[in-house]
Image 1 (tube, rainbow, N blue to C red):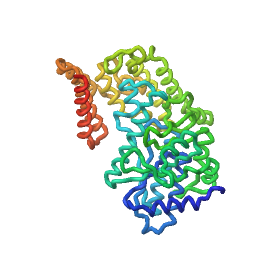
Image 2: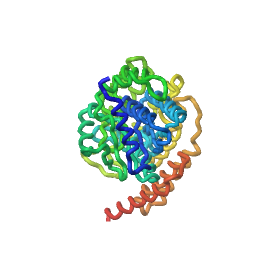
Image 3: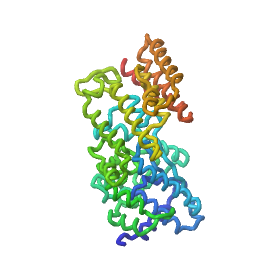
Image 4: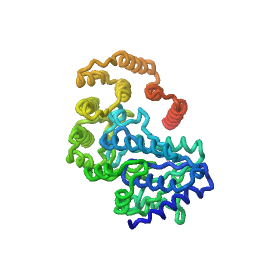
Length: 439
């Protein structure tokens, strides 16, 4: 092997031990793809060379789940994460696996179907911040609040793309391994930045993972999908996944999802309904005169800027998602949209004074069931009507109160009240600032 693995492992050991801030934990970004897999494996094997008494630094393996990841990849990643945690416990490696997810009100379907956000494009990637950056940032902030500082290890490599090479060069400090992150007290370490792609595959094919098994399934996934892995996105400088990378199956930022097409062509034909939905989302985005409102959410009308999806469009997207879910959940056991998301979608529809079609009606019609959301739906409807009537003198207060209620309902649905007070205070501060500007 042309790559000097011993030198790489020794450098990692040196960085692990030689640190004047011994409490700084390591956060390893793990996507399940080739780059992050090699990163974790090299770090793991390096630490195994140390005496157990020297393994004092906490290590977090952080994997971001957008809730709309390619289902085939999700199965593989979840299985791998379980093996990693089990093996770390047995081998006494101070490592904890964590999966980050978007808050309920920021999920892809709640934003797109509930609020009518148009499918993202490369100029308006509203999904990246809400689904990837925010969840990971929350975890980093929680970690640094306890330990003051943290170091993020990423598998980014200069050879992966010209964009990544430029990004690495832009942020690196000459003569130093760590570069400063945009978050305070956070540093980035990319030990694989000089590893070539052929060296990476040679390593993975020759060296088995320390958590057991082989890399055969990983290699097969890449071969079948002709794909690369999405990096852990920690800020808006991280490149998007690109045309042929594993990522969200709903991704409309690219023209063609070559990875999903590759998997379908290689026998994963159950994914065809997902590809059809993605193509429909592109159609709705590219034909605003047919699928979107002229009026924007703030009540303004602009010649070149369209508003959210028409309610008919939102209903049709939900219908297609549920229909696809019915087709694949029996054989694949995959849930495309959760019950909690559907409840919040209904809440947003009522907030927007759309009462013609209910989420439960769509669900029952497709699944031939009698799921009963009538009491909950009626309560939400009455709440929306009462709020507008009560705020007749101050109609601008309606949106503020609705936002505060949505925050409370989101925390309740997640069975987690943590951070509610902070979220409410932030929304109130925002409202005060907006009021000052309008005066």
